[in-house]
Each structure stands twice: as C-alpha cells, then as structure tokens.
Image 1 (tube, one colour):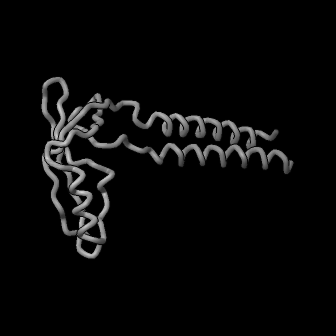
Image 2: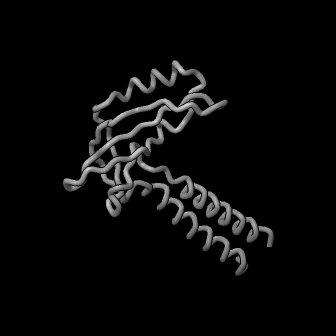
Length: 139
C-alpha cells in the first residue's frame, strides 16, 4: 500500500470514528425533565403560511426557565385550520418533555438536538477510506 493510500485510509478511519461518535452521542449533555406550556400563539409567516409559536417553562434545581425552542413546531402550515389544530395540542399548562443542557440549563428545548454534522463527517471518513483502498488497488 502506498504511503498516500495508507494516509487516506488512516484519516478516513479517524473521520468515520469521530463522525459516528458525534452522531450517536448527539444528546449526550442534555438532561430530560418535564415542563409546562405557558402559551402558544399563531404567527403569520406571509406566503409561507401560519406558524405555531410555543413558550414553555421548566425548572432546574429550583430555578424556573422559559424557552421557545420547539423544533417540532418549526414550520409554517399552509392552512390556518392546520395551525389551529396543532395549537390545540399545546394547551396552556400542558405537561411536555423538555431537554436542557446540563452545563447551561437555560438552553432548553422540546426535542433532543439532531447532529447531522456527525453523519456528514462519518460519510467523509468512509469516502476517504474507499478512496485510499481504490488508490492502493490501482498501483
């Protein structure tokens, strides 16, 4: 195996391992708790439609935090009725799951973050390994 091919495979393996680690440990620093819906509002997004915005609260060590980070509601509905139906699912006071960053509790959200970057780095690593193997075979 040429030195260049060996380095491609080696770095590809490193990238693939790092990417897999990121992808599978996306929510590693987040802690689950229960929060409550404070309020929901409809927001006109112009030609995109109507969006539902959520404000929720949660407690960590006796401190109450509020957040609006609700990825599952991060879209506009083309029909106002669809937006109203979604808003009805999040009535004031409803208990909802909340995930907060253990190192920064004010960073709370209703879904664990999805780290697509990890899968991208993994794919780059696999591509580098394949390129290294193909380069070796040509020689």
